[in-house]
Amino acid sequence: MFTEKQFEELFRAHFADMCNMAYGIVKDRDQAHDVAQQVFVHLWDKRETVEIQGNVRAYLQRSVINTSLNFIEKHRRIQYEDEYTQQQQDSAIQGDTSDFLQGEMEGIVNDAISRLPEKCQLVFSLSRFQEMSNQEIADNLQISIKAVEKHITRALSELRVTLKPYLNLIAFFSALGVGLSLSQLFL
Image 1 (cartoon, rainbow, N blue to C red):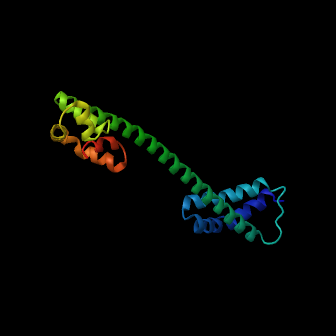
Image 2 (image 1 turned 30 degrees about the vertical axis):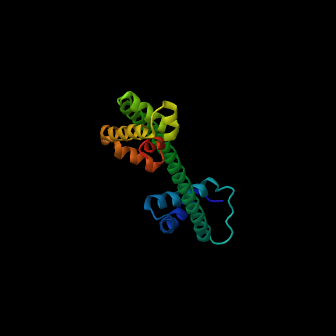
Image 3 (image 1 turned 90 degrees about the vertical axis):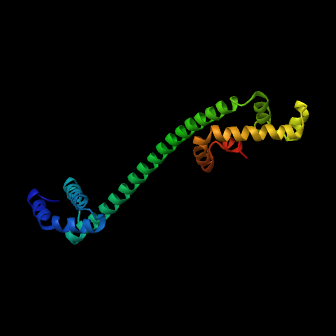
């Protein structure tokens, strides 16, 4: 049990040393000061029930070490939680953005396809979206395989010209694994 005068003497005698000890652990002057202050506040709050057996300095040192380690652990946990929260927010934003951009790109590609001549558009769509072989398309439309190849070649040529400003963006999405259907149009 401490009197106010005894506690004040204890504080004056050991506070600076306890700050230095805490600094050696937490590596920040302000935080070290907070740790040492927390140790003394805790000691004052428990002054009526605390029983220090042995050396008071050793008791304070052990308290500073434990409080410093608890501080570091709490700080590390908070930092991890903040980083995790930021990653979750970044992922949500990136997902929303990539979904939006993919939708925009698909709209641009669909618009470019709709500008193709009707027969060329039909052959290209059957080839790329219905995944029909050239033979299947030829049989289905009752045209020659050479005609199918000619329509696909023309469609690809016109789409490359029309979509030239967007090809780097399509390649970027392909590298991210987003919008693979767009990149497969040109294979």
